[in-house]
Image (cartoon, rainbow over all chains, first blue to last red; front, side, top):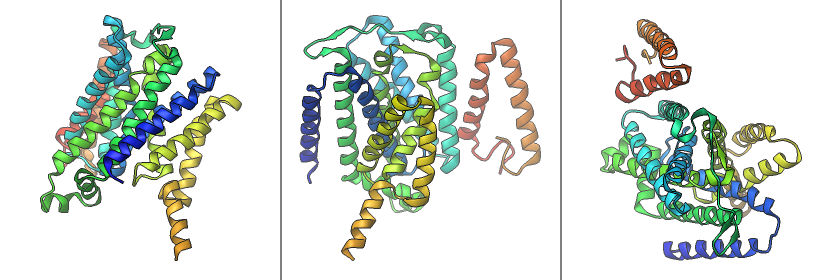
Length: 314
Length: 55
């Protein structure tokens, strides 16, 4: 399938899903699916760096909250439309990603993971001590009751996140089928021999970290409007980082379908568990599923399907 | 931070980190101390990945 066809198909899917969602009248549906869509964006963004390039990022929450807090700052300054906040949040988080990319010059594996985690904690401390965005007390965002053309504001947020999810998946698919994706795969498999055979590893890694960070920031920008009350502890919650690592791992990290499947699967389970049992169960579910998948299906759901098909063909 | 497997490095890193962290929480408030601790970690990882006394 050509890349342009895929973009068109994604746009079509987004349109169809949104069209179908117009039939749903229950607002809770939009609240729940917004979270699932947000995780699709986060998991896909994580996978661009973690799955394609092989650098584990534990600082997802940092990028995500950077996007969210830049939206808060913009909202306090002049209440721009949400698209502006998304672009600005994405740009800032992309810059942070670029900075993180330079860390990959010297760090690999577990040390890179530690430093991304440290990055998120440092950011969180700055936000906690910044009174303009509410500091540790948090900040209230009063969102408009109605959105133009669409009506209910939560449906508008849902549409925004749906489009973001579509864009991020299309970007991931495009990377996968381009020379960039091939270059990233060489970095993942053996960075030294890639460098030795002329792959510009640093530039590729920088593109990968920037893209990944920018997408995470874009996912975070609508968050203040969604929760209407944002404090550093919830914005920088480690659950974001853990989930966006677990989802690609459960779905499969080798292609764009994996994070999508993982995010829908895990996100839906978490939403159902929140309603039926308790939200405290979410992390337990993630942990149990992750251990289970690492033991039973190290290549995730997608890998599981693939090996089934191969077995049948053999 | 001190350098994996280096005893003096570990001692120096632990002492510095502990003193600096408690100084920040005394003079600038406890909410800043994680930034200092993790900032140090980040700087070491960024500029001397093998640690202070590492090879």
